[in-house]
Image (cartoon, rainbow, N blue to C red):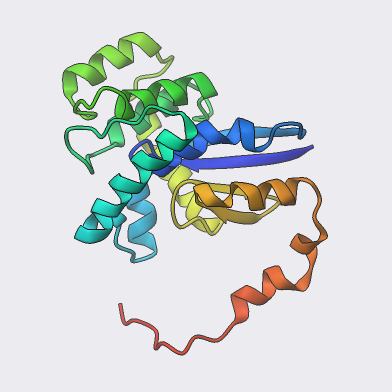
Length: 214
């Protein structure tokens, strides 16, 4: 049985789409999933990347495409009143629901729907307070323990080579994006390609573009 670590941030519409699609994508396979919330902003900063929402035309495309993909999946997806927004309150609430900071699928689904259903302000303080009461986490989401755990989860993701969400790590190999689910299924099915030379060769292909100075 393979184990999947699913790295997500509730801010990402693609993480929501992948979360919804995953059970169907891997139907019939034997696997386990651990959901690990991470702070996308921290991943982007570590890799010196701009987020999609920081590039105006790309930002518009993300919203158009994610809504179309949701319709194709039969999934409700309403854009929140403001996006991007600060997701830290939602991430900490997710971690606070479990001693190890690995929320179950119900908690993740509740938080995703909070953001992507209804077209409301996902970071509104009153809505977050009501959501906290609904989920009744065992720990204080604003505690130093939970804050440190979110930082540790994000740093762990970076150390494993994760650079965005949604990402999935299986046996040390990183798969990124909603469109990586078919590729990941092939890996879970034991496709020999994933233990062949092509996987590692991709990391050693020379680039013709000079490295960007920090």
